[in-house]
Length: 504
Image 1: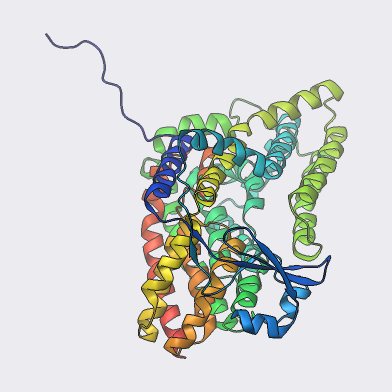
Image 2 (image 1 turned 135 degrees about the horizontal axis):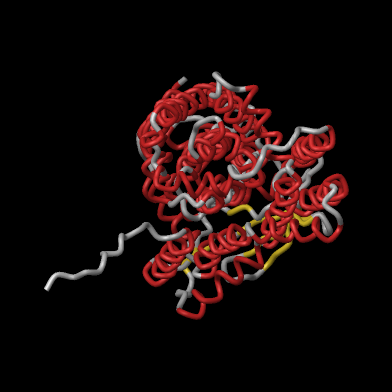
């Protein structure tokens, strides 16, 4: 007898499920990958001495001199430690030691996401405060009025949105590592792009890929170029011309790729990878049933203050050493100001703030679960083991082949260690001296590190992409379908740049 029921259509799992699958795989690796660690070196300002921590946890204070570094094989200028340029523990070459295995079991899997939330609470609060401000701006009519005005200004030349946004975000990425900070922009810019006739993926691509290309081809980014070069024992100016040229070309390639897809969607919305979500996204972001309010002086002032807060944030991060505590405090003050200007009244303003924040709780939890993967690997003592295995693979190769293999090595390491500064201080003291043995400049290793980790950032579930997608309810498989061709193009381009840098 035939069934009268309808077959339920399979759908791609949510960001949480993808991350939990990765988490389980990471825990499984702790059962098969040998445990081990490198000794680490850190400058302790309070005692003006180096503190060496061995794999078994023992510590020793050493005189903070260049001679000490030379004896340890850490080929870095001592001033890079004493002036604070290198502020994280640096791996000491040739000190890798296997340790007793510490496989992560069921209890560790259960606790890791909770620990991840604890460790990323600063980012989560930042996201919630931004969500609260957006809730007020939405319900005051400021966003609707502003979007309508912007739509009129760009009518007929909507592609300029893609060019301007991607370029500006890439500029922030290459100079000070603009990445997590862009989380605040998605709820604001998605409606702008949709009003222009594009889909949400175009906005995601402009913001996320702008940031990713900028950080991949970092020039003066203190969290990658500077700290990696310092840890490699060279100036961050070494290789900056190649990375700068790569930035310009890769940004042009990325913008052209996004515009090609965007114009296809604009011409025929059914070509959108997320066409099935069109109605739901328009209902969520465009508020089509609402009458467009007048763009009054008060609404212009609210949006201007909100926009100015991002400029202040960029200034603080790039020149004042701000991080999430200071950034959140900034937006907290901005939120209070906007509450007063909104005219909603105290009770309604607070209610809309809380509602706006609640809509981003899921995003905050995604951030915490992503951090859990790193916790599992660190507690399982396999992060250093993976690095040590990579160094054994590339020893004694031809210079050009070595450079390309290093790109692949850092691509893999970028999955397991998504932190740019964390990967730099862990890997550079180990990897950079290998360049000397094959006759290529050390800045090639810095570039390989940036390109490899940057490429992996396009898709790695342990990075920001799942957080980004969850803000717009786009599934991971749709993003992969969009980004993989561009990832292949940029990978080939990066390999060519790296090969040329090795010999020019």
